[in-house]
Amino acid sequence: MFAELLATPGVVEEVELRGSIGFMAYHGGNLERVTDVVARTAAEASGASFYAVCQPEGFRWHLPSITIGSQPSPALQDFVEHVDVAISIHGYGREGMWASLLLGGQNRVLASHVADCLRPALGDYEILDDLEAIPKQLRGLHRHNPVNLPLSTGVQVELPPRVRGMGPRWADAAPGELVPPTAALIDGLAEAARTWG
Image (cartoon, rainbow, N blue to C red):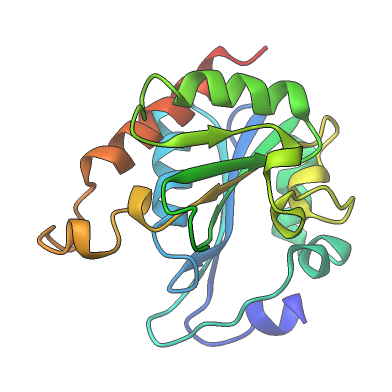
């Protein structure tokens, strides 16, 4: 199914191999909006590697993470073999959690490090790195989840719409504008990548 998605006209797969920590956004483009922008910009700012799959406007095909990781593409395989750890960026929306960022994934030491870098930057948001506080479906612990494929696994970051500049609070923002919390989020993620290890 992942190969079929990648073969769909307008779907773009990107990989940039740089540092040993990598940012991912394989539900990017029109699917989980702004996640690819966050991952790409944080990767560029920190010298990290980058992998994304971006879907075009009007197209929204959600493949569960475990189906992507069970049969990775050659580009994703190159990324996984190049990096030591990964930080995957996702979008979610859940009633009562509009200001909660969820840090799942198997690498709990990295999750704590990312949380420590995000909390000072995003004082108006709740940064949850305790797995028990994260809904089970959003914990990102399955071994076939792409974020867990690198040698030292990684962290799955779930972002609510508000921190991605979506919703009524940011209705007046210009197209493509990085609203203050999105810019702060990127700065915090880049700092986490630069200072890891």
